[in-house]
Length: 394
Image (cartoon, rainbow, N blue to C red; front, top):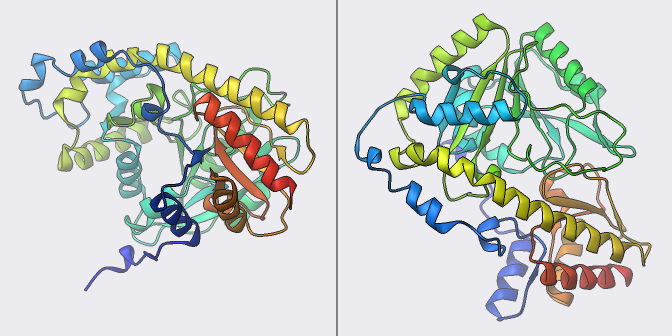
């Protein structure tokens, strides 16, 4: 009765079952996976946010497939402030979040069964987004050697006759590394030579860390990338720490003729759905303005969490932290004496600590945990101490 594209394994995994049992028993959880900024104790300007949603212009229906001009102009100004130069609002399409943006792009670029390359480790949502669009994902690897970098050998090995695009997250989730300037040049060369699109997810772009010791020069936003057809994705969820305000966008850049053709086709796709509501579009300039105060708070939290974590790590040897350049996660290398999932369950059952096993993010090897740096300070410190004490006993 049901399509193969939704033929997923819907059984709970052991980690989820353990968490459900723990919470059902009323036991305390020290949540080192907390990544929802609206529940992490940050201070929002409620008056400004709620007031923006009351714009009387929202009562008018303006069926603009790309999004209303004032909203797209606000996004263009954002990129101007990021050093991308004059981003043309006509090359922007507003979407109901970045997940919808991916769906639009997969429809634009791929026939059923076509392939898109994506780096591992990566965020697990991509598998579902591709499958429901009848697109196949082919992985290539990030490798770690005094910092994360693209394994271009594995990328070229993954290229095939049905490859249509390469997806990178900049900075990556969860590893936190930016695409380097040299890596950007090589990605552009591959895409231009083979006629591929480059899809760059920049939702964490504003959360770069200072003085990370990275040897490579970071690439900035790809919104002014001219060497290959490029689609840049972002939105309010991370930029303004407003995940409940489902508003994202696609910015197209690259060779002029390809951009024109892409936008004409994407406009029809967007017009078919007209999914983004008027109040959010009208509020977008004001909501984008909230990013300054929110990013300042988040940066302070991330810096504090990293300092606390590093101080604790310095007092022991079994666990180490991998270098991170941006975002709000940290990757920990732990002894691979059991599977990552078994270790995560042990942390929960013995210490009440919730951490993500590395296999959730398709790490190539066992021995990794992923934790969020947004967890409120006291809970983060206690959770990190308990985690290290537990791992130290292995």
